[in-house]
Length: 133
Image (cartoon, rainbow, N blue to C red; front, top):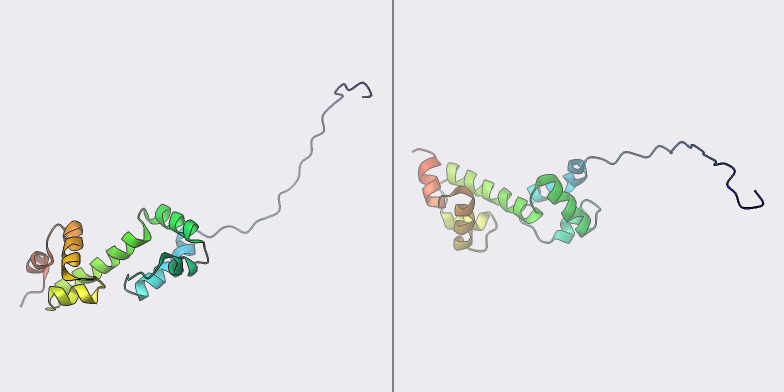
């Protein structure tokens, strides 16, 4: 009123416009996963990987880590080690050749990474799980 006293309140309701649902994180990350698989897990840069999803590097890294519970680099390493493990099981290629084929800078780095995941050296793994002659 003219004296500044509250007379009542006004309340209004409105309908929110329908927003397009955000696709699930794994769908949004699929282009990056496809890229990693087609490049055998060998990463050139996080920026290049994020670009495949049309996200910023920061947002991509955060969404990837929240979705897969590991960083893109660790995921890529796991892809490379899985491919190396398959080679150890099914081929007679040398450990050095497998290290090179799976994108490791040298045999020592490959052996260290392999042992950290599989708790065996590549040679020990091959003797236990490799194909029988």
